[in-house]
Length: 319
Image (cartoon, rainbow, N blue to C red):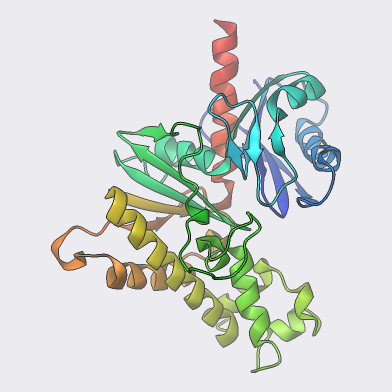
């Protein structure tokens, strides 16, 4: 069986996975993303370790790279990545030579959208918005079941639309960006601010050091009913609904699909988001409000879409 690997490169972690023709994930490997302040070589060493662990000595037929950044229209370069060190960097070709196989490159949310359109939560719809909530926010626009890339290949960078003038500083260099209020980073920031202010199991989870708190801890605490953790999700969910209302007003999709690591919380996130969407969307009482649903593939949507993109590329190469 051909071996196609998807690699989702986010702001805090790398996920690599073997994915078959039915979009089923098999062997996986994870690494920590060093962040944007390290050398590119350090990041790409982490990617290589994850890819080789998944391959486990087998010949790799193709790798799809889902990058949390602005990818050029040709799929050759990461032009800018707020949470990673790539800057106008010919990533695809360099990694293809390093791994000695076919490599394809796209934005992480575009890859997630492909998975959801072909096999997941958007497969029954023609027009969809796909959001990925992780360290930041990624986005993709699907019209007529086709991915809209835009003039520069960078359509869907919703996370960096300014929602709060002169708001919180963002790693992109701007301020008040949506992802500063609705993302994994925002979730953790909201929870950290309450530690020591009111009783919470999060204090024990992080050993009394708020700097050690991470998103999965907040999710686990929220699932047990912890008020602080649930409050953090309510705040982030509210911002999610407000931002989605703006996108729906502009693009009028049939469905909005939410993936990425934060989506693992399911209704803890989506319930307050739906309420905020209904409150914030202009003319909500006079239109069909699109369903806001969790990605079928959750945090794995990016690797699935990337691997399937690699499979299609290797098929073309054989023709």
